[in-house]
Image (cartoon, rainbow, N blue to C red):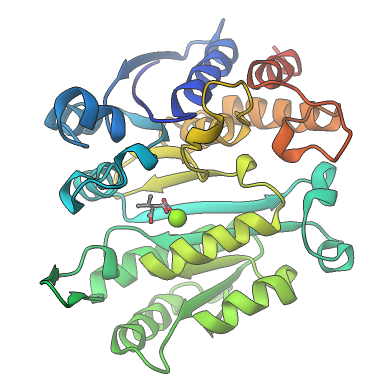
Length: 354
Ligand code: IPM
Ligand code: MG
C-alpha cells in the first residue's frame, strides 16, 4: 500500500525532529507492503523567508491532496515582530481551518520510566497518568470575528450545535475505548457559548449510555489537574481552554518533549505534530527530543493510514528505549548520561522488532 505523506519540517528544531522521525518510519516500513512517499512543503517562518507568506497556497493544495500531514514545528522570535497576517502561527491555524481538522487529540501520558520527571508529588500519580485532552480546533475564539483599532480590540467566542456535537462524538467514542469517562470543560457560569456547549454535549451523551459525563468549569479544571489528575480520562473542551489545559496536562507528565498530537476531521486525512514548539534556542545542537514527533508519526499510522501494527511497533520501541535508560537532556535526571537527538532515534530503531 502506498501513502502520500505531506511533510512540513517548519522552523527551529522542526526539521531535525522530522528528519529523525522519517528515519524511524523508513526502518519500520522496510520489508513491509507499506510504502510512504514524502513531499516537503513550506509553512511558518521559513515560508515567510522564502516566499513572503507563512502559508503558501502550494502547501494548502499539497496537504489537502495527501493521505496525512506530518509537521515539525513553526515559529520563532525572528518573526515575532511581523504584523498579524504574517505571523508563522497563521500557518498552523490556516492549515487546521483549510483541512477541516476540528478535533485535536493530545494524549498526556506519564511513562512509568519517567515518573521522577513529573513535577507533582509521587502519591498523586502512583497509578500513572493517562489523560486524553480533546480540543476543538477550528472554532471558538480563535476563529470568531475579530478586529482592532488604535485603542481597543475584540475577539468573538461563538460555538454552534454542529461544531459541539461533532467534537463531543469524538470524545465519547474515544472514551468508549478507554475508561469510559468524559469531563467536559467550559465556563458555563459566565459564558453563553459555554451554556450552549453544555446543552449539546449532554445531548450527544445520550448516545453513549456507558460513558459517564461530568462538567467542570475551566478554572476548577486547571486546579483539579494538579490536585488530583487521576480523576481524568477524556477531557473535551473548546479551542482556547484546550490550548491552555493541554499545556498544563503536558507539563504534569514531566516533559513536553514526549507528547504527540493528532488533528482530525471528517475524513482520514489528519495532521500530526509534536505538542512542543520550535525551540529555536536549541535548534541544530542535537539537543531536541525526537520522541514526540516519532510518536506523532505512530498516531499517523494508526489514525490516517490504518496501520495499527506498525504504530504499535514504533510505540513499543520507544517504550523499550526508555526502559533501557535512553534519555535526551530534557527528560534526564541531573547527572544522568544523555543522548543526542540522533542517538535517541538510534535507540528507538535498535529496539524495534522486525
Ligand atoms: C498549540 C499552539 C498554537 C495554538 C499556536 C502556536 C497558534 O499553542 O498548537 O497549542 O494556540 O493553537
Ligand atoms: Mg498551545
